[in-house]
Amino acid sequence: MNKQTIRDLPDEAVRGRRVLVRVDFNVPLEADGRVGDDTRIRESLPTLSHLLDRGARVVLLSHLGRPKGKPDPKYSLAPVADRLRDLLAGPDVAFIPASAGAAVVEATRSMRDGSVLLLENTRFHAAEESNDEALARAFAELGDVFVNDAFGSAHRAHASTEGVARHLRPAVAGLLMEKELEYLGRALATPERPFVAILGGSKISGKIDVIEQMLPKVDHMLIGGAMACTFFRAMGLETGKSLVEEDRVDMARDLLARGGEKLVLPTDARVAPAIDQPAAAATVARDRILPGAAMFDIGPASAAAFAAIIRTGRTVVWNGPMGVFETAGFEVGTRAVADAMAEATRAGATTIVGGGDSAAAVAEFGLADAMRHVSTGGGASLEFLEGKTLPGVDVLDERVA
Ligand code: ADP
Ligand code: MG
Image (cartoon, rainbow, N blue to C red; front, side, top):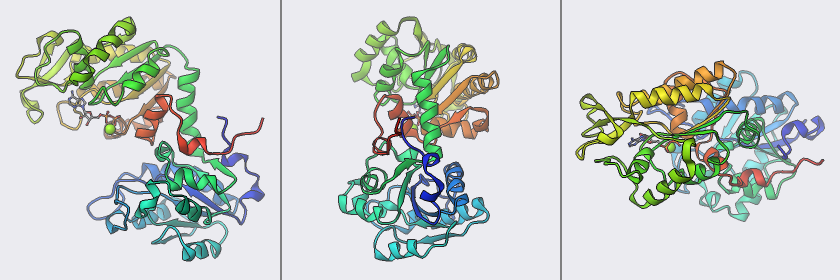
């Protein structure tokens, strides 16, 4: 990576200094207000420990949910402070219900070395998402050094991700950010082969740029999810009530022609009259989908074929579930892919899961630890795989040669 990270900072640059860290604590909250899946908090610990061990005063900024630009107690980060305190087990963790202004600056100045101050949800300011200059400057007053460790927010040019870094130097990457960029970057730039991509999910339109970007680079591209149905239509097959994007059929036809042998589509499907009728599901060949049925998962022959290819891979990148995995009965294809990836991982392959729903599926199957890397950023990993520049990364200090 050509960006500086916290490991490039000399200890004097952080000891006793206010280090403003943009983290991605956008975690699910339970009905009782407590933190649900705390993966994103735990993934920030290496960066926080690195700084705390060196006596930094760590000031944390994050967004949570979509509070529409004004304070909303439903989206307070207060419960996150409690979980962070438990996870860090030692350093003081304080929380204040504001993220900018004179009182917050004062609070950052009266911190003890080696302690943490978590600020309130940045999206309580409408100016956050509009990347307002004044808010960016206000955030910049909260630290002497800026660290961006929020990979999951790096594709958004917001005041706390991109704007602030234009007013606060040094501005460097955290360890989670570095890890995410290294796994995804290496997979795209210097993949060990065979390189297998697995794409699924609901819409081809959201993934078209990823397909375009990755098709020339991979050895095999496996297509599942509802996306496969748009390809079926392009092949002239009946797709019944399946989710098909009519306006992308020509594009799918073009990809089929260009992809040749690389592009692997399901040969069979799990179909049902409706999504809430998994008990009525049947397996059919892909050219036997009836007008009254819809495809909700890849079929068993396809799952076996996909798994066999995945097991040969030395680099495997997965984005998008193979079916409606949220419904019991339609998770089988997605589970087969996850199992095969776990097997590939055990055989030494670099396996990477990107995409929020794919990561959720892997977690649900209890296989998150069986992968080499599960990205904490759904949208960000997608944009990275599309070859786009992430504004929150772009703005950071370059490493000098
Ligand atoms: P990710 O978040 O991993 O990038 P997407 O958001 O693109 O994945 O797609 C996930 C959604 O796609 C899931 O909610 C899943 O139910 C849906 N999906 C997958 N296969 C089908 C299908 N055959 N029909 C309808 N929806 C599907
Ligand atoms: Mg999704």
